[in-house]
Amino acid sequence: MPYNPDSAISYAHKWAFLRNPRYANFDPMGGDCTNFISQCVFAGGFPMNYSASNGWFFNSLSSRSPSWSGVEFLRNFIVGNRGTGPKGSDGAVTQARLGDIIQLSFDGVTFGHSLLVVGFNGSDPLITTHTYDSDNRPLSSYMYSKARAILINN
Image 1 (cartoon, rainbow, N blue to C red):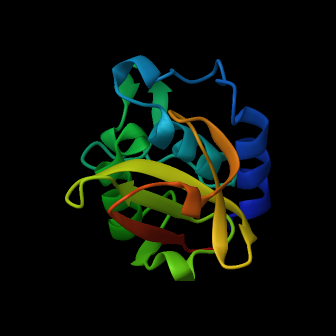
Image 2 (cartoon, helix red, strand yellow; image 1 turned 45 degrees about the vertical axis):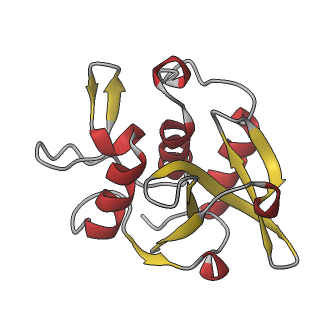
């Protein structure tokens, strides 16, 4: 089934300032951004990957993959995935399209925040995310050291 970015974006708008009770809220554990982005990508049509070594899934707080809620783990899963679930490639923010993921590094070393591209204001991506709950927020309004895009393959 191909990725449907419109479905991912609809989900993002619906839950931008709320928490879907079907999933754990990771805010008390350091942030909910990547958990939320995984939910959006899942809503876009990708099935979960239950691979024991490197899957992408969420059943419960005690039954989930690191890639579901961890910034680097999500990037590594999507870029390296050859099985079920989302696949993609690294890209520049200028290459990002609707439904792609942008990740930010605030210290210039470690990437620590995941965002979903839901629109554009000219060339400025508009994002939706959790932790610092935002919907249709311009990427240019963030202060960060580095940004990267994860371009989702259809």
